Amino acid sequence: MLFQLSEEQLMIQQAARDFAVNELKPGVIERDEHQKFPAAQVKKLGELGFLGMMVSEKYNGSGLDALSYVLVMEELSKIDASASVVVSVNNSLVCYGLEAYGTEAQKEKYLKPLASGEKIGAFCLSEPEAGSDATSQQTTAVDMGDHYLLNGTKNWITNGGTASTYLVIAQTDRSLKHRGINAFIVEKDTPGFTVGPKENKLGIRGSDTHSLMFNDVKVPKENRIGEDGFGFKFAMKTLEGGRIGIAAQALGIAAGAYELALAYSKERKSFGKPISDHQAIAFKLADMATNIEAARMLVYKAAWLKDQGQSYTLAGSMAKLYASKVAMDVTVEAVQIHGGYGFVKEYHVERLMRDAKITQIYEGTSEIQKMVISREILK
Image 1 (spheres, helix red, strand yellow):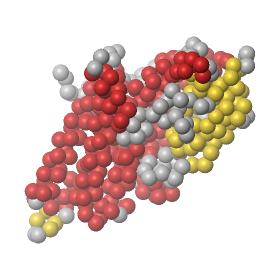
Image 2 (cartoon, rainbow, N blue to C red; image 1 turned 180 degrees about the horizontal axis):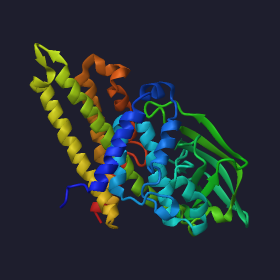
Image 3 (cartoon, rainbow, N blue to C red; image 1 turned 60 degrees about the vertical axis):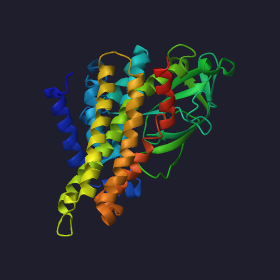
């Protein structure tokens, strides 16, 4: 086992850390308060190559490995999970899906501008009645010969208002159940496609989350991804990689809160000494550090397996399940260590606590991860 990062990985990690501190931290509280999408920061992330990290250079990507990607996700998420989720969706769900399963023409037309950060993508699976039960797609795509006619509603779509390219999962033949589902590339300005109001959320408030409505939207046949009926498998395969990204986000949120709590515990004094000298606080910090390190090992292992071309279904679900729990536990304790200061916005930890919760919900709830894990270990 090699636990040492390569020189290139260390450089990428440092670049992400510098970007988070210098570009994301200024204004992060204001963006959260006003639910403002970090447009300028996302543009710079694209220029740095962070929006198409694992895409081949042939398609304007950075050609990096999954481990480098989770290092970046961890560092960005320490400061601003609203920005890091854009990186996660664009890399894991949109670019990966197109590069792995798209046609050459689709890659040329859609993947290249997404990987370079010129455009942003969105992944559209969840619906009002189809969250964890992704087989119950109510959005329909009727085959009209040379095109499909798309009708339905998608919920909780990250990058919903700012994306230009949408990967939409829809039911083509209900009698075939999940084998009748397809995935389509839909462009934003297509007639009949409407973006609903932005959601007012507990956390990741700078993230652009919307419902999307499709009313007789014409989708060209060449915009279907894969063979007829491939859509459900496409969604599940794509989400497997997405779980690694969200696990890394959860890890970063936890690590960011821990670093703030550690620094504060050394500065804040009570009963004549730093609160870190009190065993009650020191033991909290010990538990936080240990759990974060355990989560980090699970996340890095999942990324490593992906890089090795090995199955990462089990490892990815374990990483997301555990890292998201650690994110919640650690951020709650970070607020506690800060005391009254933890309850006000300027100390950042209350925002990290709010941001942590979504990591137990999106890209497969913790309950879904347990289903995946149990299925894998009982094979």
